[in-house]
Image (cartoon, rainbow, N blue to C red; front, side):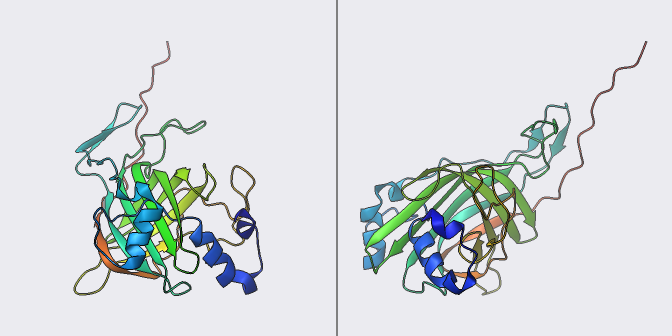
Length: 243
């Protein structure tokens, strides 16, 4: 499946997308025995589907190593849903997310304050292909959360999967449904990022933190709740007076 990640021929897009999706989408969000035959097959093929992500509670004050903090609720994205993907309309594709921002919470080499969009939490996604009867899934750790009103992007590093590459970063966009309009979702593989450079492991189509396409797919079951928070200012660093 990785060979599809390195293809730059858009003529093979639909086929590559189908193969990639079949092998990349996480623990199913349904936890009971109800639903369609595809849903039941999805859960049967993926026992981890009934697992519930550990709750991530947005905090009232986020501190950082520089000794400063930001008051108020943190940006967050939470929910689960099934999407309709036009290139694979008969497939069962689900996403579950529980993500919260922890601004300036993850210091990096050369960037001791971390980033204002640092995040934590869990992303799960799964894809059942009725043509093969197989389900691909992955569980990923959130590393970035960015919101704008009722839209959000998150990125996550794959931790467990039955088909993908552990350590790969994926990007997901969310739009909260309002006033009768459905929620929407977009993902960073299959239809975008064909010429996105390379990631840390040299794989073509690398995804940077908080990078994701527009939410191009309609959510047909479930939905997502987005809490927006403005990006906080850069933390101040205490200075020591010279003698």
